[in-house]
Length: 273
Image 1 (cartoon, one colour):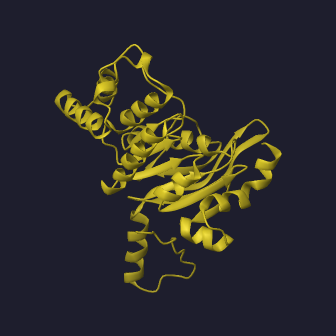
Image 2 (cartoon, rainbow, N blue to C red):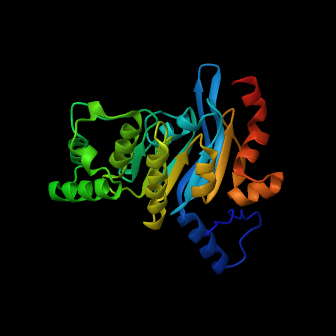
C-alpha cells in the first residue's frame, strides 16, 4: 500500500480529537530528523536535512555519489556526530540516548564488515553475542536467516573465500540477526549477480511484511522503484524530492523513477561529480 505524504498542521488545533490525531501521527514516525547538518571544515556534507520516516515504511534514499546519503545514515546509526540539528530513532535522541537508539537498529554498511577468518555462521553467532542475545535464540535466528536466504551451504565456509556478492549477503544477514525494528541498508546488492540480487530483493521486501522500518540506499534506481513506499532524493546534502515513486514519476512526466532521478540530478551526472 502506498503511503500518503504527511500533512503538516499550520493552524491551531481546535479540538481534543485533532490533538489526538496529531499525537497519533507523531507516534507513527519511527525516525524523526530535524535540521541535521554535518560539516567537514568548509565542506557541508549534509545541509539542514529534515525528514520523517514512518513505522513499517520502506524508504528509498537516493542521490548521486557524494550527495550525503552514507553520511546521513552514519549519523543516524551513531557512527558520526552531527554538526547541528537532531534526530530520534524509535523515540530516542541519537545524541543524548545513543545506546537506546542503537538497540532498535540493524545496519548493513556500504563496505563489507565481516570477520574473514570465521565462517558465515560463526560471524552471525559472534554478532548475535555482541547484541547480548540468548545463545539458543542466536542459533535459531541464524539458522532461520541462512535458510531463508538460501545461504546455508555458504554459511559453513570461511568468509575469506566469499565473492563480493556473498560478502554483501552475509552483511545483510548480520544486520538482521538481532531482529531489529529498524534496518539501514546501504547499497545492499552491490557486487551481487542477478540471481542473488533478485533473491535479496525478496528478502528486503519480506522485512516490510514483518513490520520493520527499512531505509534503503541504492544506485540501482529500479530497486528503489520496486521496493519503496516513498523515495527521498538528496543532492549536495539537501533533500530535493520526497514522495511515492508513482507520484514523483507523474510530477516529472516520466515513465520510471530513473527518469525522475536524471531530471533532478542530471547536471551532476553530466559533470561526472
